[in-house]
Image (cartoon, rainbow, N blue to C red):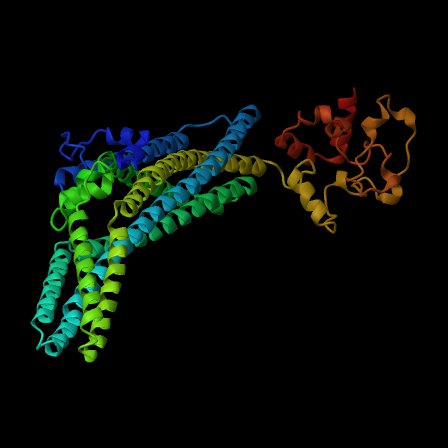
Length: 543
């Protein structure tokens, strides 16, 4: 089998992150070797979080300066200046929505990749823990059977064969073989400590990953909801919704920068571990496992000698010798001592079970099983885990940009709504050219008490006094003297009634090409005229 070093190839992103500058809180460069218990190394990772905090401060400072400039600078409120600003707000909202959607997609992928990597790590740790637990169980069971069961049968046989010295010497030789087996088993490493450590690490890692995955899932959903509600507020021009989304946008912006710092520090620290994992594992296991055993399992190279080959060979030879002795006693001693058959068969069954345990122990102690778990764990951490962390860093960056754009667009939209409301306040509510008055008139058909040029009667007469004048009264086109059907309630009898003499505005006011010439103040002035003044005004306009 090829070595683990050949199969495990460090990915390029871990190499790049490992070479990332490591600076402590005193702005001094530190060693980038993975040393989680070293204070300077811990400060180098905290420094990365401080860099993200500085980015958050600059981002909030930019937003504060932008809002201050937006509140202090006076804008031109002409129609030409409003259209580009509205376009700018619209495109800003579209850009923020698109960036948020991309960020959420990247975040879901990164969160899934990180979760897969951590799951592969915990699965490998549980497999290794199961292997070590099986080794410990086999060693303990074999030693217990050799100490208690074999000694009990040998003690009874010693009483039965008391008259035969040669049989007693055979029993003593078997006892020496049993003691030799126990000695070899005691020479194996005590896997109990390693098993407990792996189980604790796997459980703690699984719990932390579950809450991390859940928090990121909630953050992704909240980001998407805030973006959608902000776009809805811009479309509906709802101030309270925009205000609420602005507050939540600031909080989400802070969470994005915080997650960026945490993910960056975690990715750099994990990459430092992936650069040279064997050194860290050797330093953590040197108290209860020899360095040769750790190398054997991490590299699993055929050139490396199996550190368990000698004790396992002695174990096998001792069992074979004991089985040969038992076969001889069953063949020659049982005819002379029939009561010894049961104990001899008991010892034979015990030796057979010990041999089966030996084969299982040999398979479990082979390097291929634990080495596969080691490689799977490294691939899960260094490939999927670190890659997912990088995608989460990209998600945090894109989310911060999206919410920055959104927080810049909302105040501009709010100011445009205020300008539009001021324009509506300048227009007479009773002016039929005001779109608001038209909406009110269409929603309330019972409101017929309007000005004279919008009703069927005027100060000059009632509806019955209206008569169709001769066409020779004016040389202007007929369309200039036709009133709009909406203003006369859609009655076809009055659609062709000339506007002059009915107290209505001049035809040019209804004309689309002259409508923009009349400001709200001019309309208010016209409404304050008497009927005689309105007729003179119409005649002068025609002249």
